[in-house]
Length: 199
Image (cartoon, rainbow, N blue to C red; front, side):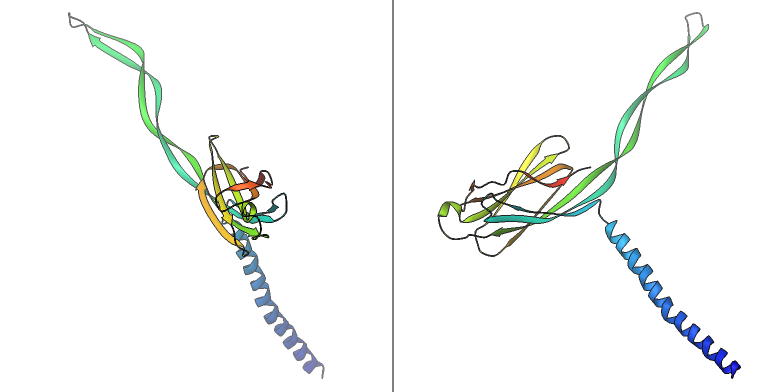
């Protein structure tokens, strides 16, 4: 009887180990997948929602940034102490040490940061006075060198509208949500709100 009990206990332990092993393997795989996904972008985050001052327009979305390395080549100038010799008219040899300038092509690693901004623009009041029938979002992108440009989108329907744009080397990205007509924003600005800030 004791011998049978020991066999049954051994079988139960082996079964528990066999069931637990795949579960542990799956947990390890899930953790590795999550880590790989989160490490695939230099920056990956949601932004918003932000609203026009009358709360009849909203904008929200997602921004991803990818870091790409490249070689930047340039000419490097350096000086070297060398022995310079010559012969005079009598055939006598003379030498002296001089500094001579040389150039060589070298590189340093630099990086570009490619970004993609996705947005969903919602218009909560698409009827009424024509001056304010559309929702507007205006993005301001400030580059590393201090220059900037603007990108605007509108939504004059009752359904949310999705937009996207991309570029590279942005130091800051802001958005202003407002109301307007079919051609341009006219009022109820939210002011500049943060979308992305380069660390």
